[in-house]
Length: 308
Image (cartoon, rainbow, N blue to C red; front, top):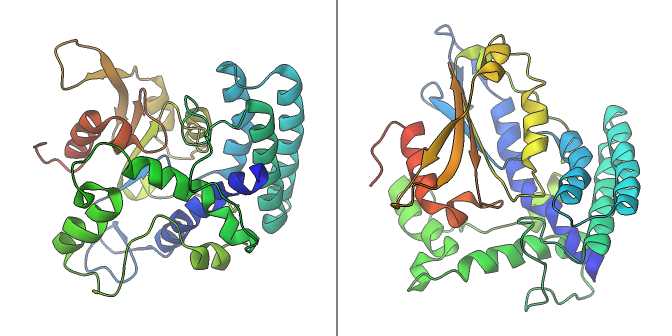
């Protein structure tokens, strides 16, 4: 049961993998911009929030993060790092399906040695609830359990009405605003069909070329996220071949305050040319849920629209 709960991690990022491949279909135009397939104009920017960009860097940093927050001991960290090295070797050898299997085995180990930590927020445990029941289904169907549990947790936040749940908002006001989604298409947190279709692509590394095309790239990450840990995100950012990277890394971060009179720091941001990186404090994988005020201000800054 514990292993089945942990295989959820993969399903949650199958959706992101589909969008990542869509971005890979970009084509530079004469204007030097970046166009997405089927779009009528150049992309104005890309936002990567707790995103599945570098499976290798994430696998290599899971254990170090959890040791620093006292959820894994030295023995567990040693075992986890050996498994992460296997993932790294398999990715290098382009054995992506095998790498995914090794990575889910790594999550199983972390689950067993950490007391069933919540991989979306290390301050929480993966407690038993209605979504944790396991039945004799396919491994891919069992794989979405953890993500669905987290979606249930998010929908369980105080809202006042069903329309204010994540599903209600996505299939309600957002769908109405976009005006392009067919009536028979329904948003859902995870899809078994998508996961199955992308199972061999899930562990492929993503190479970002948007910065060199002058596209605005905004990266944000929740401090408490385990599945896409901030130290893993920092690792892949530091590997970018963008000419402005050295200057970006040399700049200080600026603290962000928000929404109260306490003047507590809610986030940090570093910005240089067309790259912005936001470190969101006291937030897990779902930053807008854990830190809605700072998320709103961040989004308003990214799209250059007043927060309201």
